[in-house]
Image (tube, rainbow, N blue to C red; front, side, top):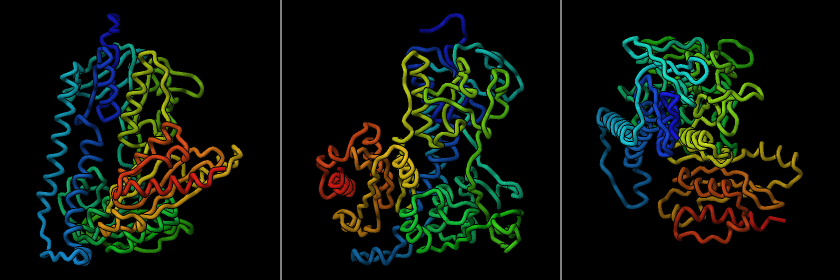
Length: 479
């Protein structure tokens, strides 16, 4: 399949999970592939995101479990006061990052992908430029290009970073110190996960949210039980409907809070540290997108469901984009799926992605997960498509495994079409919610209905029976 008229059949710009999977899949299909990376191989997820943060969550979760003396006493277990070494927890995360990054790099080299270190950019039709760290510039020709440049933490105006006392998740994963009192700006999944880490390790947390309610992106029923377990039961103070309009690094860090409605300053805080967790911005600058006529939308590169870059209804030839830079679903596994689908289409197959079947998880203790539609979106679609929406709830407190673990505070909400039984979405809070959601994600991917699913036998006693109960409840309501 290699085309001798080009230096490469495919050049991938960006070596995060989206770029990695695209390059790996393309090499497996016999294409001559190069991947360009300006930073560390593995991108945000491996180096500054999901990999190190989950290592921190795993370690701090152990601390939380051992330090929960009341919980252990219910089992008849009496533990000594817990001790931990911050530096060794940090080393655990750093070592994991190094191992994953090394394995990823070895995999690409082993299958023949050429790794080019430097800043990649488009140079017109079927050309890619690379400038290395020494300033040496080269131009390569390629039949197709995949843009997989990811995203970076978004820092609102008025917030000054010093990457020590005021920092983003990029620096938080290093766990270089533990502020006695830390403010977390934002209550999305990043803010929640780090609040979980910091409170487990003895820090006092103030969570600041610009919108009216804490955890605004989660299902309301999930938020209700999650707030009780993840926020109200811990050393966390919350402030909502206020903007952190000015943050000044130092000892202490000074925070100016402004009312979201009146725009008046309502409070000034002084804390030891601030984590800015206000979302992420696409890395689309400096790609020379104008050279091929690509126009971004709020910085995101627009694509169709085949990963082809588009400008309105016009397809930009030979250019594809995957991952965070597209703004579709800013998840590592979504980027990986997009990368594989892009290559399939490059190779002449007709593949499209189903975003509704891609699950998301927040790795707090307990976890939160979701897949498919929110209840509000499902209601709108039900009206538009003239079907009756079904909603059932299954509770962990009726599950033998959860009761055995003394972890029965959990809920699964299942959304489905009452007319045909098709699964539309699910939202879970509880122990191992991130694992449980996959079964429902698979059902959505396969377009299965709850009548079929209700007949499937689940192992007893396991948490999977929470899903089984929801399916059976839903099946009884199908018209």
